[in-house]
Image (cartoon, rainbow, N blue to C red; front, side, top):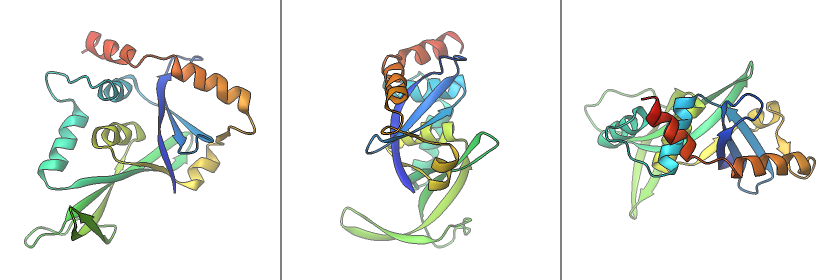
Length: 187
């Protein structure tokens, strides 16, 4: 797995579709993911710290996860099939007596405030845009499988510096407020 971070949010200049740009921590590899307008608005509003008067779907999901005592551990872009990305959200859930056994990916030990806990790891299937919208709300790390990086024909900054710089310039000049304005005007 390769840890990535949200490198930008903007529009593809060819078709004006919203796009998320993930980049690795060394800023050598980039992964563009095209998403829907409403998902882009949800991510942009969180990045701009804009709080709507009523919770959006991703805010509601994060609230439910929190109330149930679970924690978003990480999100993973798991595969790409027919130009469609797939991802999962990994939750950490404390196992308590009397609760039905959740569909678990196994257990692991975590330490919080110097106390060690045994937790179940629950993996939920999610669209990458939804998983990333939840990650930005919970500060959860974003990972991409090596297989996805290979299949998506990642841009290597050393091999294609000029194209990478053009794309970086484009992303840096996009204003996330545009998404919030779109959401306000269309909701």
